[in-house]
Length: 142
Image (tube, rainbow, N blue to C red; front, side):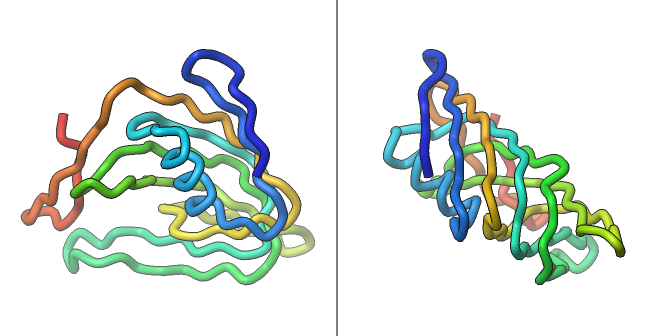
């Protein structure tokens, strides 16, 4: 990954072939001392795992994508849960022609095939999450 600070709290990241998106952004945030913020990005993936939360079952349903796809849109926030850094990333992905399909959900994993360009905005301080037992998710503690 390559990075460049472009303003007091803004960074451009260029992820490289073979890097996993969430893991790479998380390492960058940890090394930079970032505990709150948001990011968005575009790029191309060789594989991905999207998940969606089933509120009735309180579990994630998983869809593996084992073919090249484009990131049409990716957005995520940065927070902490029990002192661990957490990225909450959503994406809309599109497969390549001739059988174009579009899928969206929580991006659990995405491996960069060519490049991924990320704009990251850091916030001061820390945003924490707490476990909500009724919903079964870790929610922002605001």
